[in-house]
Image (cartoon, rainbow, N blue to C red; front, side, top):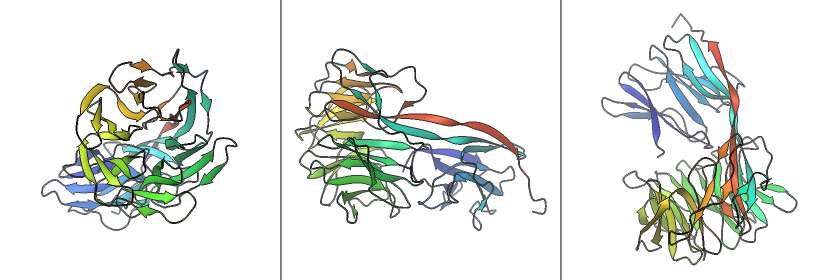
Length: 387
């Protein structure tokens, strides 16, 4: 499960995901006296920013269950559990976050959205690449979270809500033509090309759990690869296409790196950590844990700490590991821990790098640049005095 944020009122707590970039999220209410919980929303909508009314009889939250992101209210019983169906409070406002005043008479909310597009910079040996070297690849008023370049360097896979739902898209870099690859109400995201370029592995909640799926790019149905109530994500194919490494919260709830056969089977745990990527020879995995990068044998042996950083990805020649350390720049280091170097100099522009690891074809680095667009509003709350 994602790390939650808590909103409390008396003996009840509402949990919601911190991140606003996911294509579907879920709200739960937990009674603190006996830890009894109930789901407030399903897995097929995006729901966040819960806030209680001053009397505790209603819970307000932001959701796209009616189309756009708007404010909804859920009646709550004396036992702290939901009663009846949620009702819309606003329509068509595209709300990001909402908060009631302590006396319940005012509602403050932010309007707008996060927009993120794909950029690329050349890999320069003599200096960091700057915005003067950068080229914008997509130009949507939409959210892109993950991008992957094909093994032949001719195409990109990325997830986007450009159609109103989180789906996976394929772009031809020569003519910039875009084809939709997946369609699912729950949303599909984090696409990764198979080593032969014929299939895509992705994450989805289309059957309830946050699992990994595989689909051929020539059509046909998607195949479910993992099945667990914990969240499975941040996956990468082994160079021979026989396995996928991924991050999961299964077990004790801490992130762990697992490896699962690409044809299906029982995943095996490799190490505690997150966001792994295979070395080009398939012998090692790089990952990060507690703000540091590590390399470990694919069999779980010979763990070695490298350098402070996160979200690593290996270069195609295996000579460098790209990673992020701050909001603006990509760095590199050699697998032996030497040669730390800043690869980009992206200061001076509004926005920030996306969370995902950079993708490379050996000539360019592809990355996501995100911007927050919006305003803050305040409205009066009209209550039904008959209640």
